[in-house]
Image (cartoon, rainbow, N blue to C red):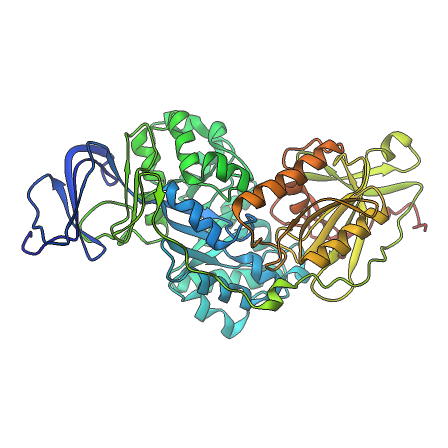
Length: 567
């Protein structure tokens, strides 16, 4: 009403109205106690001695960006480093998966993450870990009974994290546990995040019946449209794992409603983060590829806010909303000059003005690699054997090869999976198409599993890798024989580094470069190894018990029926 002084008055802005998609000139925003009190034509606001006045100089006023799907914990860097670097990008709200630490230390992993998200300069939320493993042995730390509701009801937990369609539709205990968890979350009014990669028509329909809210897996215009027609919130992925904007850009030419589209990263690696930005980089690519500005900005503000039922607080610039505000040059040029969250200026004129709160983890979470025995199972050396073959850098298939063929033999690497947290379970098989010519690479940063996975040319190199990963607490190591060539230390549950972003970039870049120098043809080879144990990507994977066929979850040996194993 103008009867008491505002804390902050922004004038002379070109305001983006997220509800109507308009860019309106000559607008003011009045802010009081972290909330927006007035949005409209420039007029005199009540000023006090402490009122701060900001002249937008005709630039665009936008809501703070909302990252609706990421994997903060498995993107190599820690929570504090992420916050430091994401503030200048204009991201004021982040929703991340939180399954990674839970897989290693159970409910304690989720609790420390939730604790670390509180009282930070930006708003951090997570989703409850669904624990979608290849087999029940990957799900031993899934939360049960009385451990579920208190964490699901935590205000920083917005729903269930991405539920793989193939796991939800499984018969038996694995599928039943997930279905009960989904039902409980829906009763609590929480959203269920989806993962529909590879789901055929009928399976996609059946999966939708369980109340799945979203999917970030469509890779074509047709898949986007199919899921929009089923009522999904479709999260277009443009980040480290995949970049889908170019493949789906035709959707923006269609005469449809775009209000259930959002733009997400699904995680950004340190190199791209430092060179191209985070969600801001994805937004710039969307604009460059022809997404209408009003649609592009809705995809990173109001749409994700509505999806997560946060639109009463954020996602638009309107009275009664929290004052998450950006100032950027023009609708076509996104480059934040000012970033505000909850009415506090966090970034202005190239300078970050806020520091993250320190996040602490107990000592035992920094020592999760407990492998003692590095003796490996014997493998056949002649005849036909079962292998994992790389079709792309991520997608695999089962392949039977003849070890007596020198041409086939030279295309194989050893691949092993070792339970790194308890017991002495391990499996060794063959991987075709990775291309490594010498040494071995191993990682503890594997998706959806507590296994350490290593790929190599000889047993000694693999042994060196495993022993070094145990010594540094986890991460990634490349060795040739007994010599360490490159390494990346990630001691927090063997997944996350404690170093600065620049150091993480340099170390992971050296690993990727060193692997390519030794024959690996794939882009980001360390990601290829990270994904060998996940149930998220078809068609055959590996764990400490054997190869796992995703179609029926059968655990398969190296040997095929016609041969017996040899030492």
